[in-house]
Length: 120
Image (cartoon, rainbow, N blue to C red):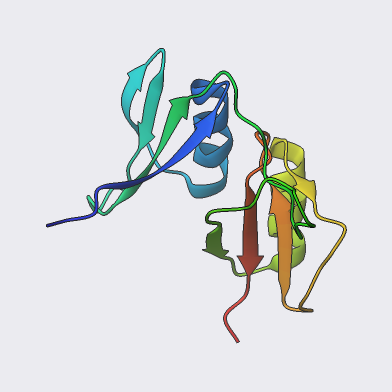
């Protein structure tokens, strides 16, 4: 068995793929109206974006009865301040709750949380 991709639901697969493409620099591997995949040049597991018209963004941190995050992406960066600025310029929002000084929790345009972090 081989993991080929992590799939994120979104009402706009192409738009969310372009957001992550800007962050990661990965080329588009598949581009269909309801499904877009980015894959790194080395052929490793990629990210896919699936149309879900009834997508409800998770709440983080979640309270009782809130839609729960099922996963999040950890993205290692060299410069946390520059990476956050790029992510926000591309369409991310910075979460109000930040549990660590060397990590920034952000939300992509579909509301999925992801973490930018610097290896220390």
